[in-house]
Amino acid sequence: MRILFIDEEMNVGKTLASFFTKKDYRADVAGNLKDGHYYIGIRNYDVILLSFHFNEEFEEIIRIIRDKAPKTIIIATNQKTTKSDSEILSFKLGADDYISKPIDPQALLARIEARLRFSTSGIIEIDDLIINPDEERVLYKGKEVEVKGKPFEVLTHLARHRDQIVSKEQLLDAIWEEPELVTPNVIEVAINQIRQRLDKPLDISTVETVRRRGYRFCYPKTKQF
Image (tube, one colour):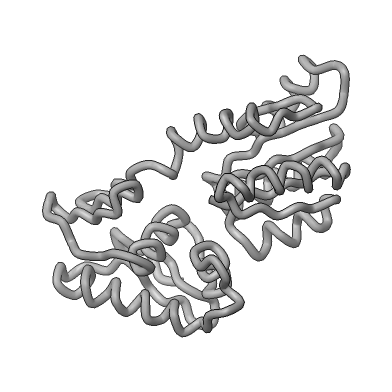
């Protein structure tokens, strides 16, 4: 899981990032909306914690997140003492949840885990294809298909972001523990294994290559880019 903290109080973001890293999350911290835009542009996040002032920039960055990754969970936070007003407005502007400062990391983790249980972290079911991340199983028309390890993780990540084109760099960053130590060729190997083990035997197409941009989950087949 990857989480982004966008908070003008960098010490808050860094403290939370340190906590979540110990919980096996991959965490990034942005101290302003400009840096937040940068991270959102290069990485896919499961959760974004967004500290805000009530202005057009907050609404705009939520719109950008929704356009790029509609299923990302957005949790708003604010320093304001008028908690009820802050909470109501954050929901109106498009946030999924709200937590007031000071933030208890354990409470935030519990909120996130509760939301993830009902979001994309669970079973992915698309027509006759079922991907179960918890059990590392792929089923097609009720029959199990042998896709394991990194190919399974790549397939799952693409399926979770099936409305998006995902670059090799994004896949490396999301799946490999130390992406800087491997070459982008490992992505090509994983994609080839998906096609050999899943697509060709079943005569379907799950992953398409988008030239010079990356890969896109395409089952069932949708329009070409």
